[in-house]
Length: 259
Image (cartoon, rainbow, N blue to C red):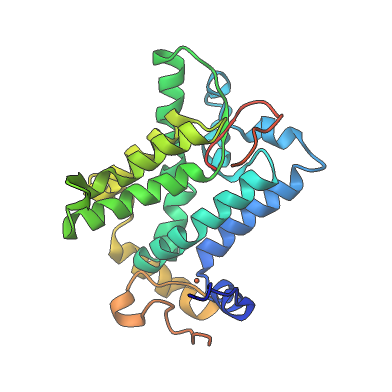
């Protein structure tokens, strides 16, 4: 009889302690804001992406909505899904690039597209929040990389394009889990596909600029778990040593992004 895999708390602890810097910061921000919404419930209203309330004076909504969640399970499942994807992204592109993208374009672009669609196409005003827009963005980017090496996978006699995997997952998620935002997830997928295809790589500062900032501020020496942009020279963690990886509908208004 095959033995079931056993939970190893030491391996989990080792994985958590090895998470790179930006991943730690974003996950901490997600958990911290969920804790803050317990006594200050108005934070959800203030930071959620509600299309009719987005204007030049409330642009903070486009950056904050992925960090806010409707409840504990919503936050927990998104953190579990986001952490390995975000850690892999940061390991590939570095801490500075990850921080710049996930506090900027990777929130404002899908959020802006969602706002425009809701206002001018769907004529609706459904507010959303949740980090799963980043989950599907990263899944789409990973799918495009996988598609280059393995264009198709087989299900019986059918050949399914690899790049469609996140799209299929979005459809299943929307059907099986009540209250998720299908349109919001599609907006995340769209930006992920554009990133994976290389069309929005211009959003990242030039590598020479990033190297200059790293050297000028001595980020590798000052920041634990910092990932250098120049990994061919410094490796995944720079010069730092390594150590021995169905939700019910919330009663609150709005839609959650993700499981």
